[in-house]
Length: 506
Image (cartoon, rainbow, N blue to C red; front, side):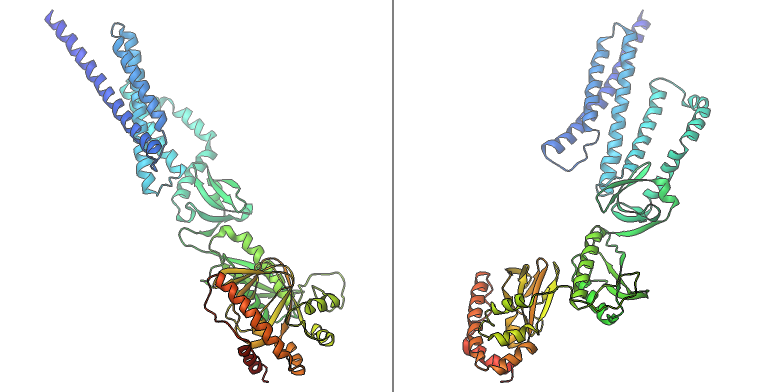
């Protein structure tokens, strides 16, 4: 009698110990994930939220099953079934906890909060497989080795059917551990004519984001078996050169063409200053000289906008110099380059007559000037004049709009009928501001060599010009005062008279 009583007490103590252990595990898991939930939702901390809500629900289910198991003491069969189910829930909660500690805490901060899905999925799979095998052995008392032996043939058949998937998974290991294929690196696959930034490496494929913001999934096995071009990584400071080919006519001297295009590249927004852009002659073609524009971008994502901007400005610059772009034709013809932007003489004469500085000139003098001036057209973003540069010409705006910059600050704009650069024309002083085309602008340029004969033929014109310059200077100073630029003193009529006489040697 006493032995039976003691055996029952021992059994109850064993059951109680098991229940206590499972209760402790569930409470610990629940407390941990509730803490993570509070950090994320209440305190707005930057922590991973993976598996949090699901594990909290599982832990609550485990507690409910634990209570149910204790209430089924009178029905051992049902209690055993509920206990096995509750043990599975406990093992699953433990698996989630271990996976969270390894992936979402250790790897999350070790990899600077960018855990690739390949690493996340692989580690999660290993953790769940380990806990599944443990559950089979501890809970159900099943020998795992016997299962492996009986399923060898089935495993071989599945592996044969999934050989492409397995090849991608194995290739994913090499892709994930290759520094040339890490996240945020730009790559190009020539066979597919695809260029994109690596945003993720998964079990089966690498995800690329193209210049059009499209996501392209490329199988890992394809990347390992084909030629992939590394275009650099902005975060690591890696840069690769971009080559842009431009064909220009044989009538344009290469030295002049190189100088024009180098200047355009040096002023482009996304082109690096170091290494400096280079323009080289790359070949002599049937109808053109081919130039190679080599430059480095601060980010390859700006490749297409930069290419379009450079080509646009090259066209305006070459056309403005009086040259044209060669193109193939079926006929052999003799033709002289014609001006790309023609201006009606009456319209030009009217523009000059409406200009303040030229308004006092006689019609004969205005007609002579209109035959000498230059017509120039600038594209959007081109610099017309640069602050502190030497200059001896003024510009009249025929069409379009320009922005005026002083020390990198926009202080005003110029529109149709307005002039700029008159101080450089009439006194020879350096440019006071940088003027940039805000749209396509048509300008009339009047230089010193055009205006000097008019001054010599009309010495009394200096008196009127001095008064006009003094008035314009006072207006400019008032404008600069409003823009908090007060470093220029007020000019007087007499001071401008002296500068005009000295500049024109009178």
